[in-house]
Amino acid sequence: MKIPNAEELKQAEIDEYNSLVQQIKPKPPLLKHCFWAFVVGGLICMLAQIILNFLQAGGMGQTDASSITSVTMIFLGALLTGIGVYDELGKTAGAGSIVPITGFSNVIVASAMEFKREGYIFGVGARIFSIAGPTLVFGFAVSTLIGLIKVLFM
Image (cartoon, rainbow, N blue to C red; front, side):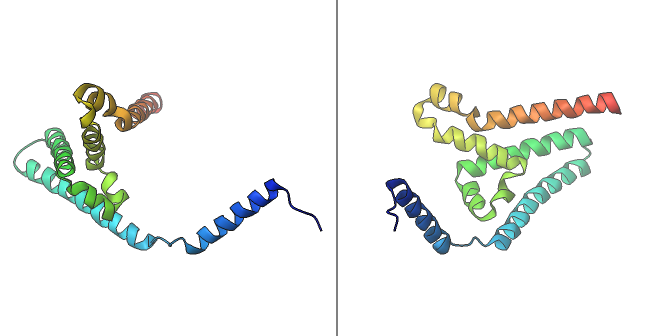
């Protein structure tokens, strides 16, 4: 009979622990999460469409109405984050609340609120783009790439 060394015992403990974790780990209600993400994301987009239609019915052009709709949705996302409603919405909706433009607004305001205690310069000013920065860089890079493809091939 072979006596296991310390490394084999450690690995056996890790394997046994992982097996126990898999047995008791709760299974997320995937269908329920998908449903709420779809509903909340759809409602956010529907609200934006209602605002856009209202502005266009008032005689505003497509470009101006789209710009005002975007600004309005960003403002609403920031406001709801500031009063704590958007975070509760995110707990229920998951990705449905972060995909629209209001989710980006939520990220900016939440990071600003988190680092406010460190001061406005070194807290809010320095950290506000820690999450939004990569999003902006990716957005700029992709839009530039799409623009180049359109110019070169269309």
